[in-house]
Length: 221
Image (tube, rainbow, N blue to C red; front, side):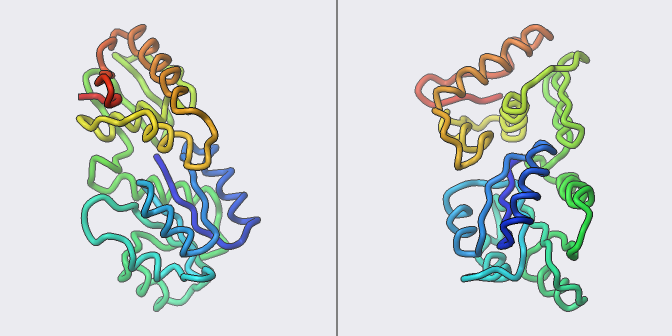
């Protein structure tokens, strides 16, 4: 799952990003509200972890700029503001959850997975289709009961295509989703990732799950 982390403290931002990547998230980072809005305008995210006290544009400004319907990230606010009124204002502005600083990193991850369990297939923790079962929280995928030994990028690819079944993703879009917007890898490298997932699925008896639409991209129909 792809996440935008918006935090102006460089030390906290780096520590959180490192931990979230280790927990299986694809993470982009922004240091202020204007930078966050630039990422949100150009890329799609499943989640946003958002500080309120940001330079240039504060967290409330970022929340107000989110679309009211359609695809939007689920937002976990991390803030030192600990008054009830602050939490109410953030939730009313569009946040989905609120955690007061200082916090335990394990709770951040638990809150994100709790948000993922709220009804909506695009955020569900467990995805199942034609013998394949993917548990995003446990970071575990099986095919016909056999555990798939996937690399982090292979897992992210399979999760992306299962989460958006029927949607064709060009190579460049897949690279941005599974490697992050700052990745210097070529989108040609996605062919290697797709080949790896297909081979492991085929070994488990799910050879035809991922389709290639020539000139368009990949999908799970």
